[in-house]
Image (cartoon, rainbow, N blue to C red; front, side, top):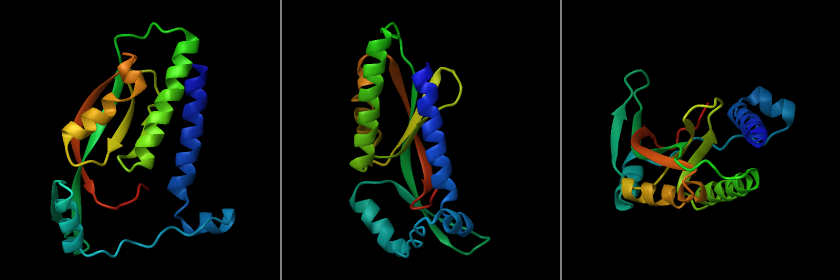
Length: 169
């Protein structure tokens, strides 16, 4: 449990820095690199690229700004307590390290955009947002997680729509 608290603290601090790092006053104070420029790829180009890759999309017209926003279907995997949580501390720690490696690999390969634990001790332990074209691919990748294979976690996946390329803030 102490390991998870430490991990959560590290993830929270890192995420906090990322979330505020696009504010110019924070960039100046901490001498950070400027945030990437806004994506200027045309709506038609984005839609065509996503369609060719097999993604579900639609265009949302923002009445307040007049912008056309490309919406993409992602898949949120809820990582829930699994039926087999009887591992020793050493086994659980080893599985946690393998779990973190799996999530890191999913991010590196571009299959997952963000992952993180929840801050309470509830049945839902965390989430991963998969950036893949189908539920079947997301499900397959989520079930490759060593924690899931060991039964320590189980997966519940739902389709989720979000604006393509918009950062967290």
